[in-house]
Length: 272
Image (cartoon, rainbow, N blue to C red; front, side, top):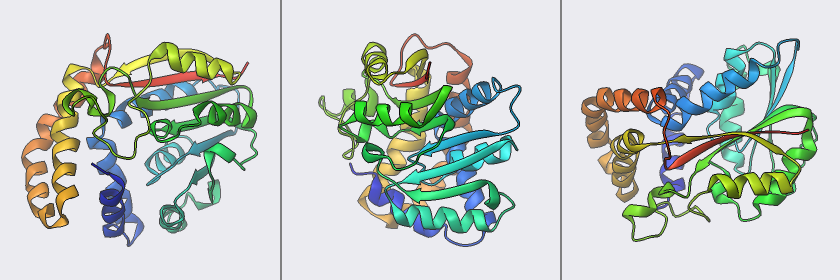
């Protein structure tokens, strides 16, 4: 299944005032378990800049901008540059920020991570569910290292090679049409980051047994239905009314335990 057409249509539906768009971003944070892990990791990393009055962040592949919004709201020290290859997404995000009090702390720009034009220097580079879309991953990691200050951090969220992209239930191939790889193993991504000059500090398994159930409940089944036709949107809304409480419980349970493995990983690496 291709996710992008569904995402594009959902994005078009939330055009309007900043309140409406912020509610949409809040819904994304709630239903996507990856956001629970990424936000926790961002808090931990930002907490390490104890003596800094400003923290510069590159949101590399911002998409709808939910993590850009989270960072700016959670830490007044953050100055953020959000990039994506989709100009329409960035226009929508810029319009949203212009209607808030965050506008003077954020810039947006069209950029291809394989030929990154952003110069930095940045203290943190964030990449959420991007690397599974890009063949030239080491090239991207080298760009991340180039734009980081010494001691700066890279945070990467991506599917793992332990059933990421829902490979196990799709005959051995990725369920998501836009993915060029199913996912990474810890050793593989450590090696590629090291090749780019980055030292891995931690690899956290996400979407364990409980979280994988939550993904099917809150993401796979509704998105599959919308991928067939947006006429099913009212039915999906009704589904969320019924499934949302259980999904939130499952998400919380997954984050509360230490998964021995899972279908996703969050990686924190650092530039020496």
